[in-house]
Image 1: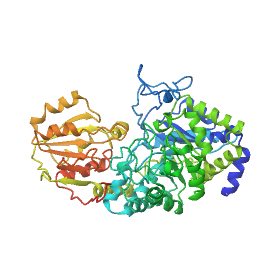
Image 2 (image 1 turned 120 degrees about the vertical axis):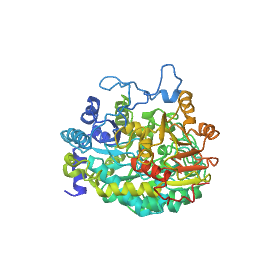
Image 3 (image 1 turned 30 degrees about the vertical axis):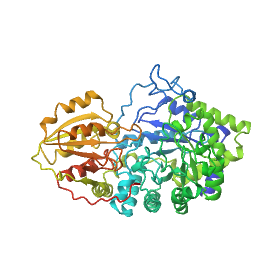
Image 4 (image 1 turned 45 degrees about the vertical axis):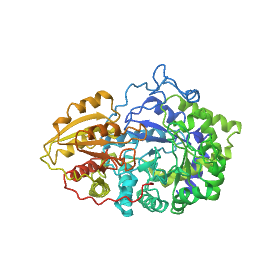
Length: 578
């Protein structure tokens, strides 16, 4: 059956509630199919899930402590677990093998395909090479996009994209919220940073096109983000609504230009930023996804994009501090968005379904527009190959790509060629294996979420010990307390040199630069950063190695070899927006 026939058949079968369900991509965290997930598929006909093994559970209420103040608008979107919802007290991941996880996704797909009017589910991940929030079982991780730029080789970006797609597809993932095509023109941007390839439009376009090609070859649907560009922002959309005040010409020439190139290359999906753009008709205080001027008139009309348009996660402060979530969702659908992404695993999911259905029945969201959205989504699912058998994969082969020669060699090459010797002004490197080293190592979020032999707390120490037996270690949280710093202070006299991580995580802003300056007063210090920006590599740090993915073993092995003179640095980064 060809695409047109298949879409026509499905559209002819679906009821109005079934059509509404196709607009939703909700959270499915961990490898356990809970009763509420089954209900979402069977009763509410949800068509997509954003999957991760990294968390067991995610709701807006997870981090709200008793008595804690929360802004009144966000409070309107808080729903505590009830009924069939799991009420968890931990985010410790349930680690499963690739085969087990692929089997779980197959089971979930079978539930959907056993419906009276079966429509295949699609599964989405959010990954930018490194882990992001969405981890899959045992996958190999790669440098952030800016690390690929540091290699100077766009063809490597293609191989990395292909490797990510091969690993994802064999587990059953169909769509990825990548590539990031933000042009990071503002070095103070707290959210984008190394998630962008560059601060230069031509470089972003060149590397993003190669990543797109890698995804396309393996039928992984790419989603360019965050339209029309978040690189100039000075605020993080996770916590509030930023506004980009650039003039229209600058926005078009610098930030929108990569989208034009990717659209021409067959880009299938775009994610809209939770940001205001007054010069593009999105006034301050309004998220871009709620602007019909931007989504329908500009993106659909002026740019001619005919693919699927998705919202960013509706749990972000860039939306919730402006509008109650279900009202914002209806507003974004009316503006022209097709898919709604909401990872909250609380009863608000049911409220979302009911609110969209009511909007269609009342005419607030015209049924003709609903049909057009569903047709675009079904066309995307056909291109995923879901029309053949509902998307089932051979779970017995899951994990083969992860250990394939192509993926392994690509991960090693990307790590070696991206690891950046940013500064060695003190001549501390390479280290002598006989020197006494104290490693101060933060537990990066990826280490906790993976917590397997590939990526775990203490990973850098393990790699350093391959090249010297004179390395002591103090492991600290990614956001340490004064108690943690005291643990380090007690051991400073043991070492000839301190090697310390200084990881910046955009959701917590947790670099430890002030404490590093304290250590520099007592011992020579080598800093292992994960960004070349001042967030964790300020200019007063004389010895800095930048690793663009501290969650991946290959990348930390490259750091260890560079420290001990076993890897000659080749990465360069001429422009980071300064």
